[in-house]
Amino acid sequence: MDFASHLKSSIDIVQVIAERIKLQRAGGHAFKGLCPFHQEKTPSFTVRADRQYFYCFGCHKKGSVIDFVMELDGLTFWEACVALAERNGIPLPKRTEQSDARTKQRAGIFEAHELAQELYRNALRGSNGAEARAYLAKRGVTPQMVEEFGLGLADRTGQTLLRRLQQKGFGPEQLRDTGLVFEKEDGSGFVDRFRGRLMFPIQNEMGKIIGFAGRALAEEQQPKYLNSPETELYHKSHVLYNLHRARKPMRDQSHAILVEGYMDVIGLWGGGVGEAVASCGTALVNQQVRILRRHTDTVVVNFDPDTAGVTATERSIDMLLEEGLRIRVLGLPGGLDPDEFVQEHGADAYRELLKKAPRYFDWLADRARARFDFRSAEGRVDALKFLLPSIQRLPDKFERIAVANDLAHALGLDAGMILEQFRKSAAERSAPGKVKAEETEIPAVERLLLRSLLGSAAAREAAGPLLAEVQLGEGTVTRAILQGVASMGEQFSLDHLMGRLEERDRNILARLLFADEGNQEAADEQVLADQAVECVRKLASAGRESEYAALKARITAAEKSGNLSEALALSEELARSGQGTRRRRSTGVE
Image (cartoon, helix red, strand yellow):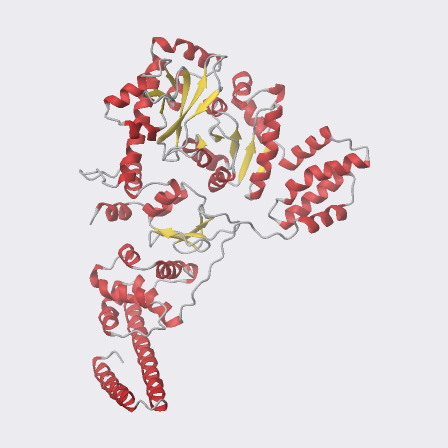
């Protein structure tokens, strides 16, 4: 058994995927959840515990636990194997080097970030880190929090990290790939990207460092925060700061807290509030919202109370609503940021406010009251125009009606008028991004045969040799799959079978694996074997009838065209076909 096969047989795919998206049991061995690979409102993503396989009936993504990690985290095959092995305590094989260029490139970037992290942390602990340590202490960041979040300091020379990377053998192209240094405009060499900044490592969902954010320590230093550029590893729109720590607290608390900055996340974590995440040096984008949706259906937005924070809250509400998330908005008293509030009032006080955080509509209504004069008809209409777009993004029709009634009451307007506005602009909209794909209809006998073969070694042993002798007709929908099963014999493996098939047949096979899971009962091995043999006989008979009819049609066409020699040759072929049928009957296939 190769290492990948050993890995897949040693890891529970349901457990791995349940750490990344919310799954619910769907009967038998099946679990369902919202697909992480495309936008949907109704779960079509299914995981089979007995098959150790996943399949989405919407976008047709499918595969093993390795395929899932590769697709979700953008990893190469070997990186996914290593990540799974390390997370599950499975020893790696002695030779772990991989030869493909992309894996080597990414491994080099990972190594560079680990070297940078070591340098930055040591610098913060050293004599030159006094100013940065004082700043952290002033912000209430304890040494424990510094260690947990791997905070560090980039020195001011601009050469320390560069020299370290060069000592490790990084050439010019590799240096450019890391994003940690950049080339001088005059082409005279490289310089460290981060200089004289407090450093925050940015990690992916697996906890690997993929980038950095550097905060200025001097007033004249601009920008205030400097982030890593886009690299092979780091795409800021695909990352939420602290997500790898926050995943479990999100599940435990049944919500996520969305804050603006790195210090907000760290301050809340230090107070025992672990479910907070932040976007990484960019405004929240749809991809980040979809990542949140994988882990929770409720988000509490707790942005800074300044004008920019309020504007960002309004924008975030729209995106969160589009993904069908429940939203509450937490505004802290005294104009305090989340980390400032926890430092001054404690985590218990923060949790109390968190429990009372109003739903998004109430927050927006308060915003409308502050902006518009509800005493005038014109002001109420302006308020309606302000509130309507957000409410229209609610995917559920009944929730829109309920909120419309609340809105009518708040504005002193007729609910029917507001609902009419909904109907004109957004009523009954379909779920965005729903993937529709054609599905090939599979004849009942083929579906029954494949279920028997896939589910029973006895069925494969009994029917496999017969299936190998059968000439399946062109109209057999699952012909390639059946031939693949027959050719593998005792060495049957679902992974290897999938690897032999074209995309169309892989989709058909995946659908069969997941169809009607809740209605399937355990069957006796002998029953499955007999069932499989009978199905092969029916397919063989259907194939011969199809072949016989096709030959007769060709004979008739040849006779009509006056081509008697061809008609005679086809008639002889038809006679030989009949002899072959009699021989097959004697073997028991008929």
